Length: 83
Image: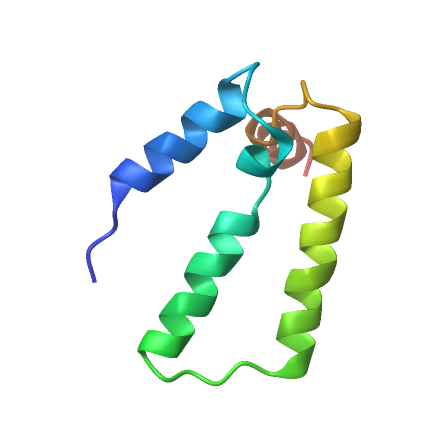
């Protein structure tokens, strides 16, 4: 399976942009890609998995709306360095 780096570059640009809307910075696109891959390869998704996606989308959209200058990649790097 080939990784599409163009889409990840677009996502990186959205995270760094000061003018990008909150939904461009959320992880919704990642979850939708995972769901489309599970459908493509007939991998079953449990209700628990869908609930986790839904909860993460809710938290992510709230965080992105409340703090639009937040850089998730920088926060993740900081978390990795502290663990």
